[in-house]
Length: 453
Image 1 (cartoon, rainbow, N blue to C red):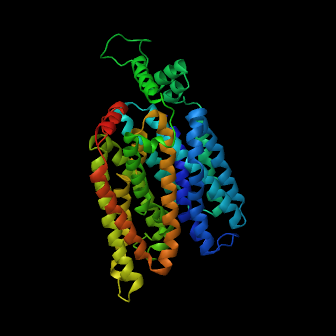
Image 2: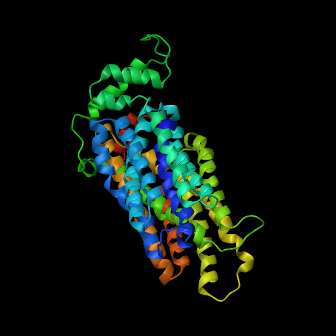
Image 3: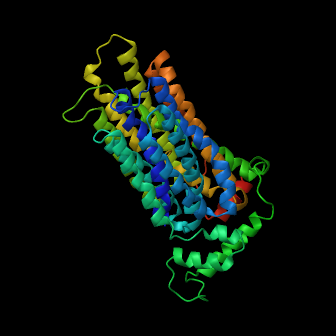
């Protein structure tokens, strides 16, 4: 079920990887679409503007219509984006496609973590949440792999297959038992939970040691009733002390996920890396390898999230990203801003990019969404998820637009220096403010947030 729902995120990942795959074809006049660098920068950034618009409506509607209904709608939205791309003959239709893809991405990033977090049992909740990021990078890798080898329009056709697969796989899945309980549809919630847990036992079990969906449902309902005594509002994220702490943690970690540089590295690496080849590996091939690493590293992180814990992985990830982008900044400074011959070090940004894929994926790339699904009570969870997604989008828009401007005025090294600073600040913030949620129930997490000053 989590895999099927996360296919929505894979489509968003396709759109994250699409610029790197398409930019060379567009700038090299390999298509009939004529664009310049400024138009390319808007094509890249409009995804993030669309991503700003949809999270709040999606967060509200998923509490009215259900998580499943909103995700199903996103399938049709994503289909339309690839249709626009296929028929584009000018930048205008690409702008529309990217903006609509941003709307879909906002829906996916808001609803999928919530849905997966609510359907998962406590012992695998963290691991299932990492599937979100794994399929995100799988979609990115899909575009990286297609880009150098197929035409612009064929890439749109092959990418448009994924929303169709998502729709026909997800339409059969149950809605979240949390949502069903919130709407007082208790019997449907029980049926959903029994299906999700693949429970074939008795309707009710008297053995306290034996798992019973009725018992789990009762605990869910008690927690939801407690949380829903006061209907959640945006102001509750700030007014309630526990929510305020959770908001600080999730918003800052969400911002650092993008400020560490992942968005520009995805969009611009194919035209930023030194144009050299090592055996059969050049910029296009290293970008494919980067996408592969992002995907595989996420699945390496999956068991670590519930064994090592969230906090250690965030510390390692933030510090690692800071070191690697710092080294890249030094290389790009000497490469582009001095007359020094650094040709013998062209391998440095290639290696740093690959290692960045590992360090980002095992922590900061995975865990903000996991934390967003864990730290908030039911009455404000959807609002918090929407605000978190907006923070992702604004941070991504900021670095994507600044990348081209700052790189042209000061040099690529300046942006990589900023990425490095952000990585170290992420590690420091995590050390000072983030607590461990590994193995804790939602009730235990809420108790901790309200008991610690």
